[in-house]
Image (cartoon, rainbow, N blue to C red; front, top):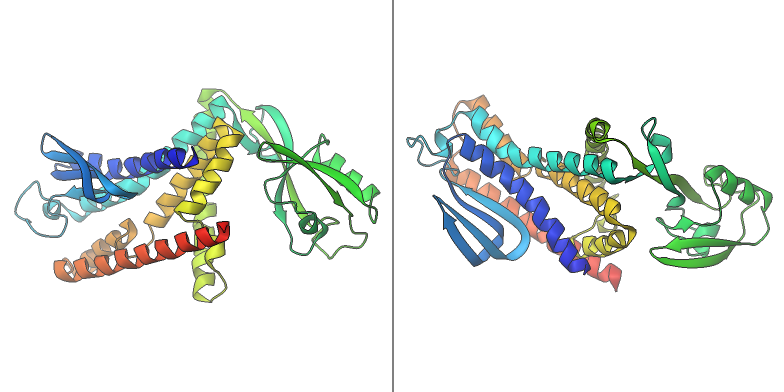
Length: 350
């Protein structure tokens, strides 16, 4: 079931991204030769108008084949290469824009049906139900780690974080029983709060938040969804920047990222939590996809925009053969990275 849901989510993300390229190219008068889900070899295809629509064997991706995208056919008015840089940039950026738009739509829809949100950041006047205390982080070598508590566990038996903190403070140095929920199962653990913990760790070594299902009217949901989407864009962009910077310094590894196998596992967990959590999860994936695609790396949309910027500065396009080789190398490196992350996901499961 997790795999089926993952494939559906992947299809939604890819189709929204590629549809952005497709529709803006069409509206700009550029001929689109093929709209493909997945990478070849082809499994199924049909033609409508001038465009071939295909489903391909390798599902982790998709593409839109745009006439003249590689720089040829400049004299044909329906060629991508014949269009002004501003139009070409918009066509390239459209995939990212549509992924952000999808995230906004999903978050706004989530607010309409009830979105899992930190109570402290809920919009004023929102209807909040199903409040729960969630563990956000477990520090290494702490009582919480020894008791096998994990991020995402829901602490049971307390009405607020303050009530739980008072309970912990009253029982420093004494073993207590803590009930918690992980997924759909309930567990209990024996844990001893530290009387004199290291600074910044707390007696148990965990970070907490109070999460509730937040619901607001549709006319407010659209605006609040836009604000949340903007904040997520900033947060995710900064996080990716920090990860890349740390990776260059040798301070980050594969344990900080998830590939397809890891996302399938998370998808299964999220699916058990309910429809609102799925909406939130897909929105996060869509915004992540948008940020990653805009990075100035060959074969990504950001890399293609970088080549347009170079063309604008130098007054002429980059040699199509050179740009093709560079983008091919970039794609090969990305595939190798994906394989390495997938291998790490599998080894983590084992």
